[in-house]
Image (cartoon, rainbow, N blue to C red; front, top):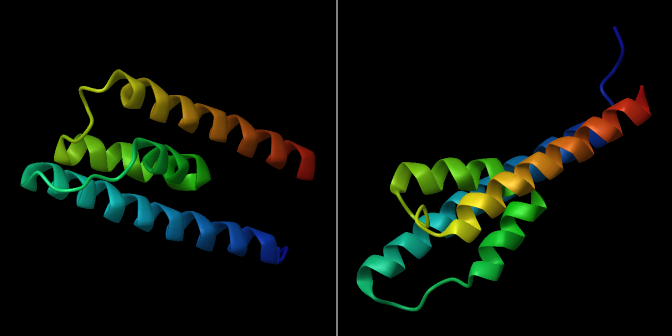
Length: 96
């Protein structure tokens, strides 16, 4: 059986870390919105999604009903997920 390369595990650790961060930041923004406090910039939320937290962010947004009425998020986050899927597929095909 072939050994899994180190960069696979590095990518998994990165993805899990960014996903956890995306969930925490999305939940914090929802809490701040309810309390009428300072909010997290939309640019920051999109950056976390682009860095790998897009799936976790979309699930969290739907679960806590946050930003679900914003077209930029309901189109932007799934678009990022599709783009990331295409990039992952291209990398896998390149490595095979």
